[in-house]
Each structure stands twice: as C-alpha cells, then as structure tokens.
Amino acid sequence: MADDEFRQQALQHLDALHNLAVYLTRNGSEAEDLVQETYVRAMRFSHRFQPGTHLRAWLFQILRNTFLTFYRLREREAALSEDGVPESEAPMFHDAPARDSESAGAHMDLERALTKLPEEFKTPLLLAEVEGLALEDVARIMDCPVGTVKSRIFRAKERLRGYLTDYKQ
Amino acid sequence: MGRLLRERLPRYPATPVLRSAVVEALMPAGVRQSWWMFWLPPACTAVATALVMLLWIAPSLPSAPAGDPAQLVARAVLAGHARSIFWGESRSDVVPAALPRAIAESGVGLNWVFTGDEEIQLINAKPTYLEGRRGIELTYQDAAGHTVTYVIVPGGSVALPERGRVQIDRWKPLVRKENGFSLIMWRQQGLLCVMASDLVSDEDLSRFKQYFVKVRSSTGF
Figure (cartoon, chains in turn orange, cyan):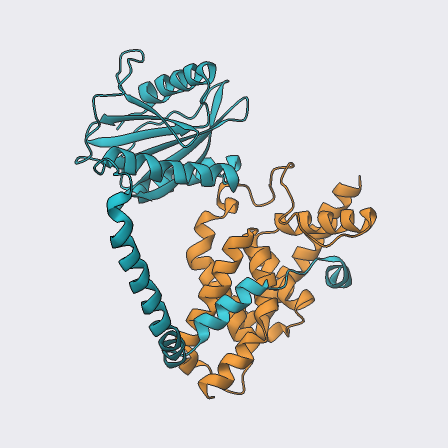
C-alpha cells in the first residue's frame, strides 16, 4: 500500500482511536498524546502492515500496546483494587455537549461504571460493542484467544450491570 | 448492555487541534520541508529586520542586572507552580503510587518526605526538569486551598545570594517575592530546594514559613 493511501486510510480512524484513548487514559491530554504516538508508530511500522487485513484493528492494537507500555504506569489502577475507584471521582470531561439532566446522569453513571472496569475487560467491551469489531479482531488486538475475549466481555457486562444497579440504589 | 453502551456512552471524537497535529505528524518529510522552504525567506527577512532594529535601539533600553542563576531557577519553579494551579494537576489519590516512581525517576535520593498533617497535605509528586537539571516536584495543598510547590534538584553550581536571607527557625533560606508569588530557596546536601506558593501577604507569608519548617525538617536525603 502506498504511503499516501495508507495515511489517508489511517486518518479515517482518528475519531475511533481518540475515543478509545480517552476511555483508557481518562485524561484528555494524555489521550491526545497516546493517539499521536499511535500514528507515529503506525507510520514507522507501516511496512509491516499487510494490505487486505483490517487496518482499524491494527491501529487499535498499536494504540493498546502503546498505552500498556507508556501510560499504564501512570494509571491509578495500579494503586487501587480491581473494583475500586474513589466515589468522588469526577467525570472525565466537563465540556460534554449539553443534554437533558436525566440523560446526562445516565451517561455519567455509565462512564463511571466503565471507569471501574480493569483495562483487560474495558478494552474488549469497547472494541466489540461500541466500535463493532469482530471478536477475531478483538482477540488479535488483545493477544488472546477468542474464547477469552468472549468471557471477558461477558464478565465486563456483568460487572457493569452490578455497578449500574448500585448507582440506581 | 451492548445497546446501552452504543446508545448512551458518550463518544469523544478527535479535536481539530489533534487532527491537524496528527496530519502534520504523518506528513512526509519532503512535504514538510517544502512548506518550510516556502516560509523561510520571508521569515529570515523579518528576523533580520528585527535584529537590526534591536541593535539600533538596544543602547537606549534599561540595562538588566547580570544573569542571576537563583532567579532563573526561581522563575522556572514559578512556571511549574503556575501550571499546577491553573491546570489543576493535583490528583491526591495518585500520590501513593506516584511517589516511589517519581523519586526513582528524579534521580534525587529522597529517604523521607513530608506527606502532610492536618494543615497541609501532599497531593502530587512527579519527576521534573528545571534549567536542565533532573529533579522531583512535590505539590502540597493547605486547608485553605493554597498550593505549595516544592522542587528539589541537584544544584551544586547555583549560588544563593546572601541578600534576602531570612532566619526561619534554625535555618536561613533565601526568601523572595516574584511575579505575585512567594519563594523560599535553600541548599541542602548539594541539592537546591525551592518552595513556591501564592501565600504573599504578611500573614500568609508567616504561614508559608511554617510550612517550610515542616517540609525542611521532615525531608531526608
């Protein structure tokens, strides 16, 4: 694939990559750094990309690996138990588009609940359910068998349900 | 649950700034070079004109005192301190995890650090660069919400002037006010230590000095 074509196609996935980066880093500027680093790496290793395979999945894989390498060290998950985040934690962004209060509340609950998930549960859930990637692609990104991905997605949903029930009460 | 996530979970698309930064980063080197080449001649002309004008009016400008290393350090610390205040870099729940890593990455061998009491709390710790020196930056916040930045860097060559030294408890650090902030600077075992705060009034300054005593007496290298 020519460099120009590769660049054009890679840029089409910028929004999706940024979205995942925000949910992984929970920090706007770190998310932007992560996305930029992802693209720089993708260009550096573009010769390794096999035309005909899923570029979107390949970019997600680079983003996740970059996150694990450089950003996870800073993650507060390391300092917390798997299920625990402070109750007073603020939503990631304060400049979200205006919505009616009930809907905005639901969004925040969902975001907060998602924040509680460990990365190995959160990433496959977002990739499969929000980004619509095939389980095989998610498995490649997560570097684990498809069965494991299914199991993690199932467990992630179970936990989310539990968290959301807690919020409603 | 999948439907709920797709429909209710907010999406965060890339900002225009990020988009242009990524496009710029992906631009081939040749294209970037030609872009620069396009702007280079007028930019050089403008710089040359500015230099000529500067040389012409320089003699009439008020002369500044010779470079004061302590002042350079002070201004660099204040820049970091202002960032801490304006960008809200305090993340109190991160400190327990961040502190050992910040110490390890800073190269400053801290054996003991003041983590706070009922008046003032350590809320952030991170490695930092100050005038080319690698060090550690600790951020405290007091009960009134004032932020205190404490920077420790190897500072063997930085001389602190005698003028401006103030006796505080059993130490005599340099106390300064600069750009609306207060600074306390001292040398300790080959390290340069600087505390910066927005505590500037007489009453606040005495409180800042109390914080200095707490930090100074509790930090071990």
